Amino acid sequence: MQVNETLNEGLKRGYTISFTAAELDAKVNEKLIEAQPTIEMKGFRKGKVPMAMLKKQFGPRVLGEAMQETVDGAIAKHFETSGDRPASQPDVKMTNDDWKEGDDIEIAMTYERLPDVPEVDFRSIKIERLVTTVADAEVDEALGNLAKSANNFEDRKKGAKAKSGDQVVINFLGKVDGEAFDGGAAEDYPLVLGSNSFIPGFEDQLVGVKVGDDIEVKVAFPAEYGAANLAGKDAVFECKINAVKEPKPAEINDELAKQFGAEDLAALKGQISERLGAEYTGAARGVTKRKLMDAL
Image (cartoon, rainbow, N blue to C red; front, top):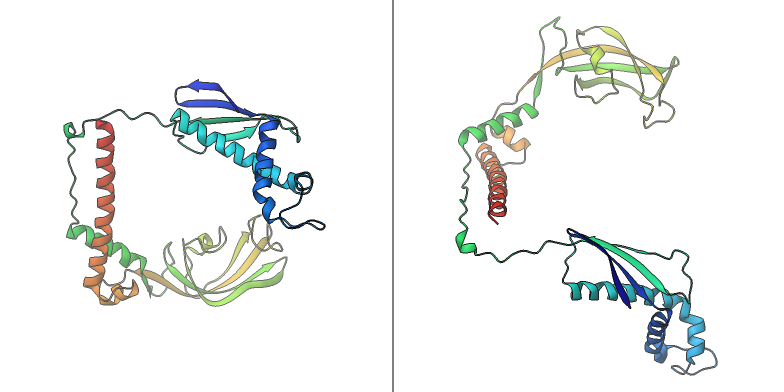
Protein backbone atom coordinates (compact mmCIF):
# COMPACT_ATOMS: atom_id res chain seq x y z
CA MET A 1 0.00 0.00 0.00
CA GLN A 2 1.19 3.50 -0.84
CA VAL A 3 -0.26 6.81 0.39
CA ASN A 4 0.47 10.16 -1.27
CA GLU A 5 -0.78 13.56 -0.12
CA THR A 6 -2.49 15.60 -2.87
CA LEU A 7 -4.12 18.43 -0.88
CA ASN A 8 -3.17 20.34 2.27
CA GLU A 9 -4.95 23.69 2.46
CA GLY A 10 -6.18 24.88 5.83
CA LEU A 11 -8.31 22.03 7.14
CA LYS A 12 -8.78 20.42 3.72
CA ARG A 13 -6.88 17.20 3.06
CA GLY A 14 -6.55 14.96 0.02
CA TYR A 15 -4.72 11.66 -0.53
CA THR A 16 -4.34 8.91 -3.07
CA ILE A 17 -4.06 5.38 -1.69
CA SER A 18 -2.86 2.65 -4.03
CA PHE A 19 -2.68 -1.14 -3.76
CA THR A 20 -0.98 -3.58 -6.06
CA ALA A 21 -2.90 -6.38 -7.72
CA ALA A 22 -0.74 -8.80 -5.74
CA GLU A 23 -1.87 -7.28 -2.43
CA LEU A 24 -5.49 -7.66 -3.42
CA ASP A 25 -4.94 -11.21 -4.65
CA ALA A 26 -3.35 -12.10 -1.32
CA LYS A 27 -6.46 -10.77 0.44
CA VAL A 28 -8.69 -12.91 -1.78
CA ASN A 29 -6.58 -16.00 -1.03
CA GLU A 30 -6.72 -15.23 2.69
CA LYS A 31 -10.52 -15.14 2.64
CA LEU A 32 -10.75 -18.34 0.57
CA ILE A 33 -8.38 -20.19 2.93
CA GLU A 34 -10.51 -19.03 5.85
CA ALA A 35 -13.65 -20.40 4.19
CA GLN A 36 -12.06 -23.60 2.74
CA PRO A 37 -12.79 -25.91 5.72
CA THR A 38 -16.55 -25.29 5.40
CA ILE A 39 -16.92 -25.61 1.60
CA GLU A 40 -18.33 -28.74 -0.05
CA MET A 41 -18.07 -29.46 -3.76
CA LYS A 42 -19.10 -32.48 -5.82
CA GLY A 43 -16.21 -34.93 -6.09
CA PHE A 44 -14.38 -33.62 -3.01
CA ARG A 45 -14.75 -34.13 0.70
CA LYS A 46 -15.76 -31.18 2.83
CA GLY A 47 -12.76 -28.92 3.37
CA LYS A 48 -10.67 -30.69 0.70
CA VAL A 49 -11.59 -28.61 -2.37
CA PRO A 50 -8.35 -27.46 -4.09
CA MET A 51 -7.58 -23.75 -3.83
CA ALA A 52 -7.45 -23.38 -7.64
CA MET A 53 -11.03 -24.62 -7.92
CA LEU A 54 -12.17 -22.45 -5.02
CA LYS A 55 -10.65 -19.41 -6.67
CA LYS A 56 -12.30 -20.19 -9.99
CA GLN A 57 -15.71 -20.80 -8.39
CA PHE A 58 -15.80 -18.14 -5.69
CA GLY A 59 -12.97 -15.75 -6.58
CA PRO A 60 -15.06 -13.11 -8.41
CA ARG A 61 -17.58 -13.04 -5.56
CA VAL A 62 -14.89 -12.72 -2.91
CA LEU A 63 -12.96 -10.09 -4.90
CA GLY A 64 -15.45 -7.27 -4.27
CA GLU A 65 -15.60 -8.05 -0.55
CA ALA A 66 -11.80 -8.21 -0.33
CA MET A 67 -11.47 -4.90 -2.19
CA GLN A 68 -13.91 -3.17 0.17
CA GLU A 69 -12.19 -4.53 3.28
CA THR A 70 -8.79 -3.49 1.91
CA VAL A 71 -9.93 0.07 1.22
CA ASP A 72 -11.74 0.40 4.55
CA GLY A 73 -8.71 -0.93 6.40
CA ALA A 74 -6.38 1.49 4.60
CA ILE A 75 -8.60 4.45 5.43
CA ALA A 76 -8.85 3.45 9.09
CA LYS A 77 -5.08 3.00 9.27
CA HIS A 78 -4.55 6.43 7.69
CA PHE A 79 -6.67 8.18 10.30
CA GLU A 80 -5.01 6.21 13.09
CA THR A 81 -1.55 7.14 11.82
CA SER A 82 -2.26 10.78 10.91
CA GLY A 83 -4.43 11.54 13.94
CA ASP A 84 -6.86 13.41 11.69
CA ARG A 85 -10.52 13.47 12.69
CA PRO A 86 -12.77 14.07 9.66
CA ALA A 87 -15.54 16.65 10.15
CA SER A 88 -17.83 14.54 7.95
CA GLN A 89 -17.80 11.38 5.88
CA PRO A 90 -14.72 11.45 3.59
CA ASP A 91 -15.30 11.53 -0.17
CA VAL A 92 -13.74 8.32 -1.54
CA LYS A 93 -13.69 7.21 -5.18
CA MET A 94 -11.61 5.06 -7.51
CA THR A 95 -9.40 7.00 -9.91
CA ASN A 96 -9.22 4.24 -12.53
CA ASP A 97 -12.83 3.89 -13.68
CA ASP A 98 -11.87 1.25 -16.25
CA TRP A 99 -10.38 -1.02 -13.58
CA LYS A 100 -10.45 -4.75 -14.27
CA GLU A 101 -9.28 -7.79 -12.36
CA GLY A 102 -5.50 -7.96 -12.35
CA ASP A 103 -5.01 -4.17 -12.32
CA ASP A 104 -3.57 -2.20 -9.44
CA ILE A 105 -6.08 -0.12 -7.46
CA GLU A 106 -5.89 3.59 -6.70
CA ILE A 107 -8.46 5.54 -4.72
CA ALA A 108 -8.69 9.29 -4.09
CA MET A 109 -9.87 10.47 -0.68
CA THR A 110 -10.68 14.05 0.34
CA TYR A 111 -12.05 15.37 3.61
CA GLU A 112 -12.00 18.30 5.99
CA ARG A 113 -10.34 17.60 9.30
CA LEU A 114 -11.53 18.91 12.63
CA PRO A 115 -9.20 21.60 14.00
CA ASP A 116 -6.89 20.83 16.89
CA VAL A 117 -8.25 21.98 20.24
CA PRO A 118 -5.60 23.71 22.34
CA GLU A 119 -5.13 22.98 26.03
CA VAL A 120 -7.37 25.31 28.03
CA ASP A 121 -7.37 26.13 31.74
CA PHE A 122 -11.11 26.03 32.32
CA ARG A 123 -10.67 27.44 35.81
CA SER A 124 -9.92 30.80 34.23
CA ILE A 125 -13.21 30.89 32.29
CA LYS A 126 -16.24 32.43 33.96
CA ILE A 127 -19.64 32.11 32.30
CA GLU A 128 -22.82 33.70 33.60
CA ARG A 129 -25.56 31.12 33.86
CA LEU A 130 -28.95 32.39 32.74
CA VAL A 131 -31.93 31.44 34.88
CA THR A 132 -35.33 31.59 33.20
CA THR A 133 -38.80 31.95 34.68
CA VAL A 134 -42.20 31.88 33.04
CA ALA A 135 -44.41 34.86 33.93
CA ASP A 136 -48.16 34.48 34.42
CA ALA A 137 -48.73 37.03 31.64
CA GLU A 138 -46.88 34.78 29.19
CA VAL A 139 -49.05 31.81 30.16
CA ASP A 140 -52.18 33.96 29.72
CA GLU A 141 -50.97 35.07 26.26
CA ALA A 142 -50.47 31.48 25.22
CA LEU A 143 -53.92 30.59 26.53
CA GLY A 144 -55.39 33.42 24.47
CA ASN A 145 -53.73 32.08 21.35
CA LEU A 146 -55.12 28.61 22.05
CA ALA A 147 -58.59 30.11 22.50
CA LYS A 148 -58.30 31.82 19.11
CA SER A 149 -57.26 28.56 17.48
CA ALA A 150 -60.36 26.91 18.97
CA ASN A 151 -62.73 29.54 17.55
CA ASN A 152 -66.48 29.06 17.73
CA PHE A 153 -68.57 30.63 15.00
CA GLU A 154 -71.84 32.51 15.60
CA ASP A 155 -74.34 33.79 13.03
CA ARG A 156 -73.81 37.36 11.94
CA LYS A 157 -76.71 39.79 11.97
CA LYS A 158 -79.28 39.39 9.20
CA GLY A 159 -77.99 40.89 5.96
CA ALA A 160 -74.36 41.10 7.16
CA LYS A 161 -71.69 40.49 4.55
CA ALA A 162 -69.06 37.79 4.96
CA LYS A 163 -65.54 38.90 5.81
CA SER A 164 -62.21 37.13 5.57
CA GLY A 165 -61.98 34.85 8.60
CA ASP A 166 -65.73 34.28 8.69
CA GLN A 167 -67.28 30.88 8.19
CA VAL A 168 -69.80 30.54 5.37
CA VAL A 169 -72.04 27.51 5.18
CA ILE A 170 -72.69 26.70 1.53
CA ASN A 171 -74.20 24.29 -0.94
CA PHE A 172 -72.04 24.03 -4.05
CA LEU A 173 -71.97 22.20 -7.36
CA GLY A 174 -68.87 22.29 -9.53
CA LYS A 175 -68.88 21.92 -13.31
CA VAL A 176 -66.19 21.65 -15.98
CA ASP A 177 -67.29 22.28 -19.58
CA GLY A 178 -70.86 22.39 -18.29
CA GLU A 179 -70.67 18.91 -16.76
CA ALA A 180 -70.66 18.12 -13.03
CA PHE A 181 -67.64 16.12 -11.86
CA ASP A 182 -67.09 13.61 -9.05
CA GLY A 183 -66.32 15.18 -5.67
CA GLY A 184 -67.41 18.63 -6.85
CA ALA A 185 -70.63 18.93 -4.83
CA ALA A 186 -71.63 19.27 -1.17
CA GLU A 187 -74.42 20.64 1.01
CA ASP A 188 -74.11 22.73 4.19
CA TYR A 189 -70.34 22.76 3.84
CA PRO A 190 -68.66 24.97 6.51
CA LEU A 191 -65.86 26.94 4.82
CA VAL A 192 -63.64 29.45 6.65
CA LEU A 193 -62.74 32.25 4.25
CA GLY A 194 -59.00 32.75 4.11
CA SER A 195 -58.22 29.19 5.23
CA ASN A 196 -56.99 28.29 1.71
CA SER A 197 -58.65 24.92 2.01
CA PHE A 198 -60.20 25.27 -1.46
CA ILE A 199 -58.44 25.86 -4.78
CA PRO A 200 -56.90 29.33 -5.24
CA GLY A 201 -59.41 32.10 -5.90
CA PHE A 202 -62.47 30.23 -4.60
CA GLU A 203 -62.66 31.72 -1.12
CA ASP A 204 -61.80 35.26 -2.25
CA GLN A 205 -64.97 35.38 -4.37
CA LEU A 206 -67.14 34.58 -1.35
CA VAL A 207 -65.98 37.60 0.64
CA GLY A 208 -68.97 40.00 0.74
CA VAL A 209 -71.74 37.41 0.23
CA LYS A 210 -74.90 37.39 2.35
CA VAL A 211 -77.27 34.65 3.50
CA GLY A 212 -79.52 33.62 0.63
CA ASP A 213 -77.15 34.74 -2.12
CA ASP A 214 -76.62 32.56 -5.17
CA ILE A 215 -73.22 33.09 -6.73
CA GLU A 216 -71.11 31.53 -9.44
CA VAL A 217 -67.49 31.10 -8.46
CA LYS A 218 -65.17 30.84 -11.47
CA VAL A 219 -61.74 29.29 -10.89
CA ALA A 220 -59.04 27.31 -12.65
CA PHE A 221 -57.65 24.10 -11.22
CA PRO A 222 -53.85 24.24 -10.81
CA ALA A 223 -51.83 22.46 -13.50
CA GLU A 224 -50.38 20.18 -10.81
CA TYR A 225 -53.82 19.32 -9.32
CA GLY A 226 -54.04 15.76 -8.02
CA ALA A 227 -56.94 14.68 -10.26
CA ALA A 228 -55.57 14.46 -13.80
CA ASN A 229 -59.03 14.97 -15.37
CA LEU A 230 -59.31 18.38 -13.64
CA ALA A 231 -55.70 19.63 -13.73
CA GLY A 232 -55.46 22.96 -15.55
CA LYS A 233 -59.20 23.05 -16.33
CA ASP A 234 -61.52 26.06 -15.86
CA ALA A 235 -64.43 25.36 -13.53
CA VAL A 236 -67.62 27.05 -12.39
CA PHE A 237 -69.08 26.40 -8.93
CA GLU A 238 -72.75 27.22 -8.34
CA CYS A 239 -72.93 28.26 -4.68
CA LYS A 240 -75.87 28.87 -2.34
CA ILE A 241 -75.08 30.77 0.87
CA ASN A 242 -76.93 29.20 3.82
CA ALA A 243 -75.21 31.00 6.70
CA VAL A 244 -72.56 33.63 7.42
CA LYS A 245 -70.86 33.28 10.80
CA GLU A 246 -68.24 35.38 12.58
CA PRO A 247 -65.46 33.87 14.69
CA LYS A 248 -65.76 34.05 18.45
CA PRO A 249 -62.74 33.02 20.54
CA ALA A 250 -63.52 30.11 22.80
CA GLU A 251 -63.92 30.89 26.48
CA ILE A 252 -60.87 30.16 28.58
CA ASN A 253 -62.26 27.56 30.97
CA ASP A 254 -62.17 23.86 31.81
CA GLU A 255 -63.99 23.00 28.56
CA LEU A 256 -61.25 24.64 26.50
CA ALA A 257 -58.64 22.74 28.52
CA LYS A 258 -60.35 19.43 27.75
CA GLN A 259 -60.26 20.21 24.01
CA PHE A 260 -56.47 20.25 24.33
CA GLY A 261 -56.25 17.04 26.34
CA ALA A 262 -55.92 18.57 29.82
CA GLU A 263 -58.05 17.59 32.81
CA ASP A 264 -58.98 21.18 33.64
CA LEU A 265 -57.79 24.78 33.15
CA ALA A 266 -55.24 24.56 35.96
CA ALA A 267 -53.67 21.48 34.36
CA LEU A 268 -53.56 23.22 30.97
CA LYS A 269 -51.83 26.23 32.50
CA GLY A 270 -49.30 23.89 34.08
CA GLN A 271 -48.61 22.23 30.73
CA ILE A 272 -48.17 25.59 29.02
CA SER A 273 -45.84 26.83 31.76
CA GLU A 274 -43.77 23.63 31.51
CA ARG A 275 -43.50 23.90 27.71
CA LEU A 276 -42.53 27.58 27.81
CA GLY A 277 -40.03 26.82 30.56
CA ALA A 278 -38.41 24.12 28.42
CA GLU A 279 -38.20 26.53 25.46
CA TYR A 280 -36.64 29.28 27.58
CA THR A 281 -34.18 26.84 29.15
CA GLY A 282 -33.13 25.62 25.72
CA ALA A 283 -32.60 29.20 24.53
CA ALA A 284 -30.60 30.05 27.67
CA ARG A 285 -28.44 26.95 27.18
CA GLY A 286 -27.75 28.06 23.60
CA VAL A 287 -26.65 31.52 24.78
CA THR A 288 -24.40 29.99 27.45
CA LYS A 289 -22.86 27.60 24.94
CA ARG A 290 -22.14 30.50 22.58
CA LYS A 291 -20.47 32.46 25.37
CA LEU A 292 -18.33 29.44 26.22
CA MET A 293 -17.28 29.03 22.59
CA ASP A 294 -16.39 32.73 22.40
CA ALA A 295 -14.32 32.42 25.58
CA LEU A 296 -12.46 29.43 24.15
